[in-house]
Length: 158
Image 1 (tube, rainbow, N blue to C red):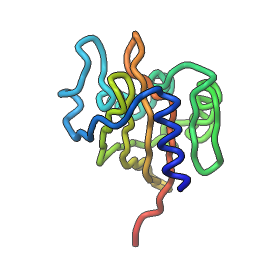
Image 2 (image 1 turned 90 degrees about the vertical axis):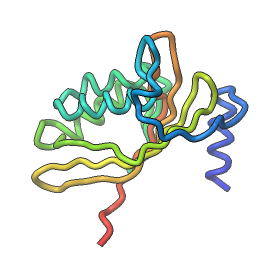
Image 3 (image 1 turned 180 degrees about the vertical axis):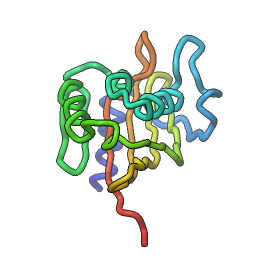
Image 4 (image 1 turned 90 degrees about the horizontal axis):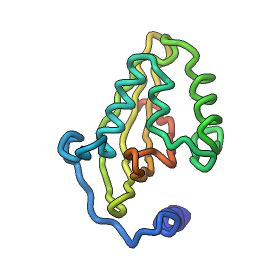
C-alpha cells in the first residue's frame, strides 16, 4: 500500500496523468536534440563518476533545496546537502572506485517527467558495493535533471 501511495504522490506532484510506457532504448536513441535525454544523462553521470568528478556528477541533479535523496540513512533534502553527502561517503578516487549502471528502465510519466530504475555497482579495491536505484527526472529549459534519487544497497547474492 505504501508503494502505491508513493507512486500516486509522484504523479500528483509532477502534475502528470499517467505512465506513457516503458522503454529500454539505448540512451542515444532518446537524447534530446539540444541536450541529454534521461538515460543519456545517467550515462553521462556514470562517466563523470568514473573520472572522479563528483562536481560534474552533481550537475545531473537539479540545483535546488527541494530535491531529495533517500537511502539507508534516511532522506536528505537539498542539492548542497546531497553533494556534501557524496563527498563525505566518497572522499577520494579509491573510495569512489568505478561505477556501473545496468538494467536501466525508463518509464515516461509525461512529456517532461520520467522515472528510471536500475542497478548500480561501485567496484573498488576494498569493499565493493552495489544495489538498486530509482530516480525521478524532470525536463527543464536547460535539459533533464534528477529531482529525486532513491538508492538502496543490496548485498551480493551468495
